[in-house]
Image (tube, rainbow, N blue to C red; front, top):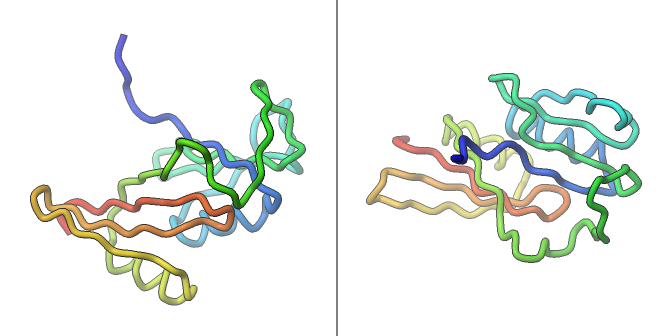
Length: 133
């Protein structure tokens, strides 16, 4: 047995459309309906360029196999952030600046990594990683 990759991140929100639009606009992910039994009114998946549904977005009233209380906008327990590897550091900064978004930059020189930290509309912290840029 071995881990092959991070499969996806699930975000519970009280603003399905706003959250999907955030990931469309900022990261260029494609919004699609989630598969049944989920419905377009309660769930949407965001796909990357490789046709992988990497961010699943569910409304508060979406059915869940493992249900627990979730309060969008509050801290997410032990989950500190979601890290995504990207290209286009300057383009990302320009997008964030155009949105008036709050973000912080970090440089890890030893491994050639530039980072941008920003939050989504639900206060989920994103770590955007750019290697070699």
